[in-house]
Length: 383
Image 1: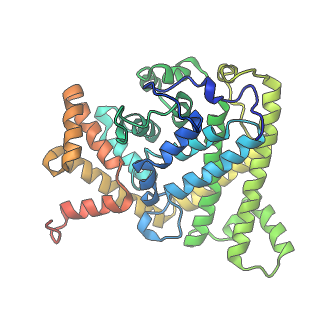
Image 2: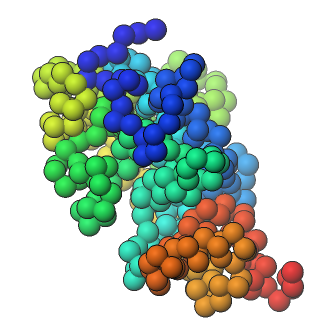
């Protein structure tokens, strides 16, 4: 076992949990957080939530679950190389998408529009809400009662308005501080994972081609290496080898650049890291430019592809229709959702009512949302 650096997050130095509870005999705090995330209902539902393609489009495309596992693998590698807390980085990585709606960003944008008058909807805040409030597994408290550091990492973005309502967890957004290094690792591991794996899924779906990707320097360079070494390799294996090399180069660059940056700032503790006010986990300028080039390519050629646009348009309409029909007639909601609504409505009126509906819809998988829409709106489905 490697020795943690002084600026890493230490289990024994955690800022604690919302609800005090005895520590586990055999598991440190952040390992326990990771385990709680893995055993949560919200984590299991990620198997049927969209990454780019709606779940029923095919079994070979990535879902939020496979994406989260891939993010965790990259985060673990970086954390270990930098002598940071591997359990914490993994816990954050596995939990970062728990609040995502069905149908990916299309579902989130639609639900945010529906919630305009009730505080809006943002998946980072919803992920925090899942682990703090919505999971119901323990007798002594609601939520998963995760450590402060794990919750800090889940909340990647937050408006000042929302931060002001989050107590100590929101202070860094008000004070211009950074999260711990493990949270920064999980954040950038997320970007590395989804950029490169979206390339893989885009190729598999036939929405982008190998010729198209020759315009992207990092792909073109790795592709030339692979095809020179293995000129007769099957295309599927070529693609895997190219993407593996692209990810590896980004990760190695990130580790080297981050270590140099950490050494320059010389933090002595995680609180020193927070007080720097600037991220210490980052890519070099060259690698960052390649990263941005790939993102621009995906935005122009994959995310705006007409087939993806058709999927997202239908997804947005399903989410909006469900929100509106549940708002008009709450009797359409199942009993647990109505009970949840009654609690929130009593505390916060119409805003609580809207939030309860958003909680119900955000917790749906792609296929459940499609089926629920069919059950309510289709004349051929009367039960």
